[in-house]
Image (cartoon, rainbow, N blue to C red):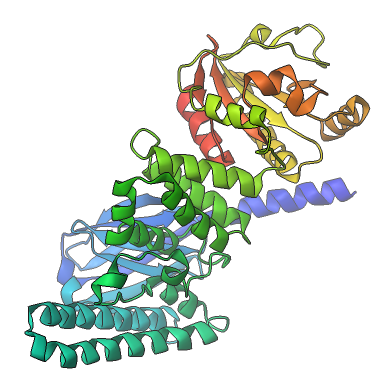
Length: 450
């Protein structure tokens, strides 16, 4: 009975989670202009649709989705962030983007959101103007200009602190705070100091309303595009870069989904080929934060971490014996015959592993007939407990268990230091990808089987 109820709730949720959404805008000052509608996902900002303003001044978007935070942009990169609380919404854009005015229906919290965004823009513009005056002024005039600048900083910070104290009452304040970037000091000695905890001082990584939205990714983009962070990346000192990454992950550690979005964003926008130190730091810190097995102390494990750097795309995937394989006709990994094989190292006592395998089950059912096979290697040391667990969860792929754990052959040849760990292998036993998150896995599987 409970199973039937679960199935009913799942089907009901699936049916209502994607509805027909509708957005209508009045934009008389933008006749014939092209606009783009965006949303966020686990990887970054994605474009949903594009549409052109009709001669009547009306702009319409229709798509399959759900109430969420969305973004509207034009061809010049101007943007409008707003939240849809219902399946349909309408608002008006008055004037050009230099003097933009947005009119939502009375009582809509987006009016409050846009007001505070404009306030932040005003203070930032004033700070930039006064800063330029300071740089061009004589030494005698700089003292007075500096006082004006500090007054702007104080007013800005007081506004942000006030919104922060009230944010739990209004979602519009939570979204507005994503625009609150610290106004930097004019003192050259402090300009070069980057502190993630200060930059994200009034940004809540655990706020479910914000995570994965365009506002969330824009906040990260603005931080990584700052002069201080870009200078840090150019210096390419691994210790300093790792410290910066640690700070950001520490801020997001209370929310696993926030960390997944963060690691997806960083690994996508800062590829290993160009940003090797940043990429390595992200990978290491994410595994430390989200893995159940991660051993750094022994010389053997440190060697695996170094060896794994050489296990690159198109490298030959090592063969190994499938210990205690439930598929008795398979003796070794090389005997698995599939177009694409997902090799997973996991443990039944690791919640992260179990959560990942549950997600992989749906992926497996979708892509198995298209050529995907899953080989799940457990590093648990109790064969009986492992067998019971696999049978209870109904894992129908290739299941094996190396009870030697991290000391076993499989863990050694694949440089396993953490569970879960994933590898995508081609039919000719070449490494295609080492996805870290489930979202990365979905993307890779889709790319290779379509």
